[in-house]
Length: 453
Image 1 (cartoon, rainbow, N blue to C red):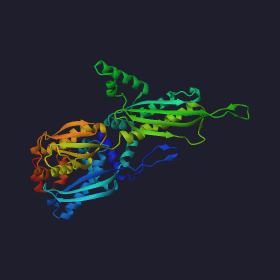
Image 2: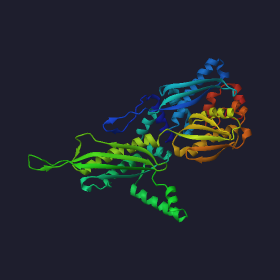
Image 3: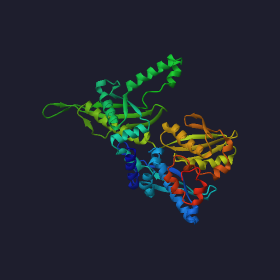
Image 4: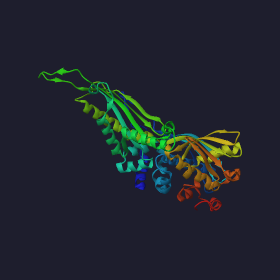
């Protein structure tokens, strides 16, 4: 399944060039969103093999472009999947990457570094629409596989209606909620009612209170059983009665407005909020017909757009602090180490504090709920593979602020940083990738003990 799905994603990426994505029609206007991300990447080449520095530069630049594409693909497909299917990635995507890169924003020619490689760093704008378009065309089974990979989110749905039949009161819109739930379930999501979510939340609060917490503290700690709540209000009114020539009086239902909001229950972030006004002249035979139509529209929005734009959103930012780097110059050089890691899209060096803390702003590929796995299984694994086991350990993780301690300061030497193997080649890398870069006997001999050569 993974290989087949990956193949479909990569083959589609190689030839799609559209930069437009499906958007929500609000108030009769269609908004077009650019579908690109900014990616910083490091390219390598073996100068001993290419001999001429110009040829080595050209190859390192090509490699940087390939790495930028690989990082962009990593926003939607796990890093491990890319490693396990590297040949497929190389043949179907990387070799055809030129059409996916919108533009090169910046190029830094690093030349031949102390580690023996020719280095080029680029910042590029990469199209994401090809990847996103594949998502919208996946079969249900494939979508469910991706949804599970992204944390298998649960939705709770609770829309209300105000109509002449409700006499101005807000009453649950059962028809609409059922239609939305069906659409979401068909797309592969787990769905519960807002009522079920509220009851479960109260049970969780009671359990925490029974364990000794105050009700106020329990309410703050307890999380809703649904990951995303969809709420909204539908307003209907009746038209004036019209008397037909046959003498029969006819009265239709008008949809005056409807609003919907989606909230991430883990962060309280409003991830979608929109007010809709239908075009003039849209009428329905009765309230059920109007409600069913609204339900279909909302179902489409939250089974597709939320999946693509939020759950599958490609990046997130964190503040990454290193504690224990001995001097500022060494701290600044860590930016290069981080940029070599596949899951790291961009790095900004913020400050070197008096207490020895180094602060970076880091943009990662993938959803926020996978941050712990990315930090442990990708970032720390790469750094510790180069500098030694448990040189770097996570000291604190609080929201979007992560503190990493240099537990073995002596292992983090300038010599190891400059002359050691690049981080992109020491962890979560296929043997094919290593052999693709290291082509000369000189580099093969230098790194034979640390790389799969």
